[in-house]
Image (cartoon, rainbow, N blue to C red; front, top):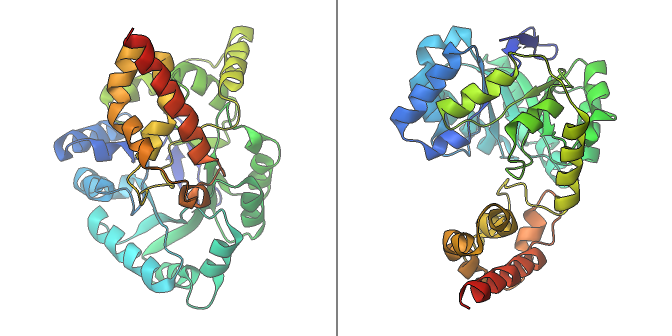
Length: 342
């Protein structure tokens, strides 16, 4: 395992981090084993968030004895001081630590959110106070908006920014990556698989390894998958013409309007299972019609409850026309039902 500087913090972190959303699907025993195994393999950077259900608790149980050898990052989606401070205290308790290495403002993509954070009584006040108290060592931020991210970087208030980066979403390589280097900020890559639509880990990491200044944080849910990803880093990175063509095929197939499974659109007030329903075409592409229909039945039947209220569109960081896409997917689902009933 190679290690890189976390921006201007002086901290050294593994070139592959551990994104902790997937461990919420695991039992506590399974999650603890996986986290400890990752540490044994050389991963020392673990990224989570207060919103990721019981992930902080599992990390605390797994890694409390190794606290001085790891770098912990977590987040708050709160915009007010009281809410942010409550999240900080809760994270400290669950992580079983008395300090957080990197505390991040979560998903700041809208100007009004940024204004609320900076306003008197806003979350920034609480985070700065916690830093002064030694509860936080460094402050970072995450976003899904390219233009907003450039503005956030230029404030010079943060040691890191987390942003989507993959061969499907490579905009950051043009201006954002050089800018973070200029300001001595860490660039943390989220969604290396485009939210799950890239099903070739080898291809995904061939792209990512071309940019060693971008520290990738894939989510892991098994030892086998962790070993697979780390195996890529044990050999030279070679990107062939065939690889480039395969990446382009993904881009053509998906276009720009695809769900990244960030789940900011949920919960739907009418009970629509938005994320799995948005992914139906991908399921259908990977499975036969009869299998995909059975696999997605519950989610696709929930689409009938959509009233196009627009709440999901307001929440989506990618401004996707979610009700329209759901209807197209519902039509495809209906076609598959019809084809297998003949």
